[in-house]
Image 1 (cartoon, rainbow, N blue to C red):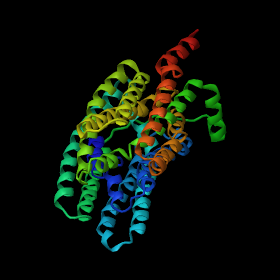
Image 2: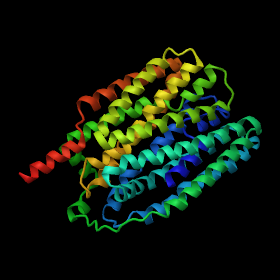
Image 3: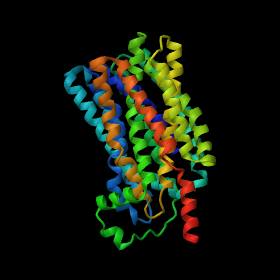
Image 4: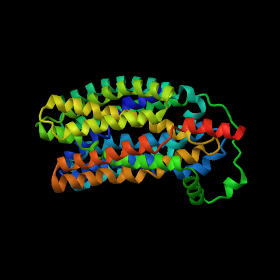
Length: 406
């Protein structure tokens, strides 16, 4: 229910659909529009590793999650208040203000991300994590689709910018409700005494040692880099569709609905596949769907074909999300898990940050088609690395256990 209400709230300020279109009402710069998904990804990813050593020997994660979770939600109500003042603000200042508020929200989300993932890893066994993510995300998507219906009504029937102020307020209310369910988690207290070696070891030296000794994890990180670079399209595809087919702003709510519907379908499939076959297989299929969507996107002329393409790319995004939340937990032992999760996020975060900015620059210089083509190349590299260079970490763990027994 925490996840479901958070997704419902997030549908009112969705980073890949609602927010880029909102920013496009203030500026026509593709780079500034692309900063929204860049902030969403980088803010979530970059801070996590720096929390790993602090978290390693904490017996409970929930108290930390609850404290940081409050600050994670406050900026959304600030977006709502700011939207009310748009008519009296200089547009350049308004863009800077909203990017600052949204950036602060994503950084605060990044701070709570690692302890929250560790909480999930503690209370949900590995055999059920895929089903947990699948069921929670499916319910969240269903609720989010209801939210997009309300967003579409507000965008069509309420004057700008009051419509966005109301939408952001709804978003804040629902993520506040999610916090109430977050508090209901029952977390066992587990003794996690880090060794003196871990405590004394320099963080970056520890990272270098892991990258040298665990080549499989290194190849996984390289795959993440290519995937996140291919995601440069995510922040532009809605704006492209609205401009290409001369659609009204309310279609951003429809695209959010389509994204949630495709992701809901994907969460069920990818969660079950991950539990049964491992998340490497999920990453492979997600890359294939991304490649297929981008190839069709290069030639799309019909709005109905565009909807299908948007569905393929959203399905790929769902698979990458489910796998990314789970597979990093399986590369390491309980003691090293916070460091591995943090590395999987922070070391790949810069790719998430620069990808939409690169995409925006490509759009500005040579148009959308050039950006779609570059994203396609990165998707092909992403598939190649996960297919041929990453081994299923569960199988690797089994081999390590067998080796230690012998």
